[in-house]
Length: 356
Image (tube, rainbow, N blue to C red; front, top):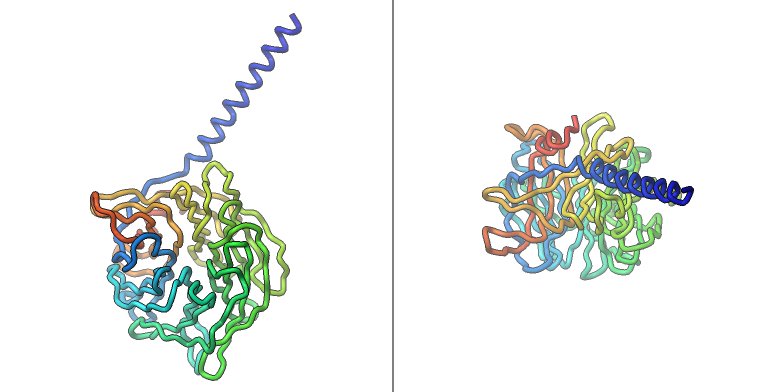
């Protein structure tokens, strides 16, 4: 009789555990919404795996003249207008990732500096943006050659404490370098001020200039948070693992939506399940995920690498900015096209995930 009771208790316990797991999974997977992009860029000029990362430049006097700067990692940098049309192309090498920062002092005036990781030469390439036309001007003083084993991901940081500007570049073997950039006789030069060993392959990088945080995606393991100041050591915090039920490796692009006054969201491309995970900027609490699915005239995104977002009011329906995602499998009907970038109104994301 005791044996029968013990067996029954065991069965009930196992079933309870299974139900608990299912309920937990359903609970965690619930905040996932399907959305549709509003418009897309022209495809990049090269086929196969070519488009990768992007950053958004804001025109100071007329936001309608702002641009999206994208990478074609088989050729160089591509600049698009806000209708998604290519307006400039810079065949400078196998550029993988790109980022920018405003208000860098150069020749006595504040400019926007654009940095990119160039795998052809294992270098960091530096440009400034023509404030009127959006053209890119190469201002690199010399080849800024990295010591990492092939430059890969890249992000920028402006310290809220010192006002200094930095470029963070990483590699497939988990090595990370932090470079300080500075003007030198009419050009921009750089020096290494920090090294980090993440562990596995990394790419996605973003810095929070308000809080001084550095986020790095270890593709097959986790999203990590470090202090972005180069003299604060390499202690880190795990934000989320690729083993989480909402996530699936690889972890790729990372960006930050600024809601103002230190509030906002960290967004991560969870490439393995074609979703974009949203985390509270302050607490890093997971808020939910969204996917970009096929619409009537624009296809969804698949296998996304780089992402970016802006909070700028562009007028009309875009009063809270927009989100950009690389599409690894661009199609038109039944036809496969070269890769491109998809754009969606931030308000759709905000409303879909009930972020307000």
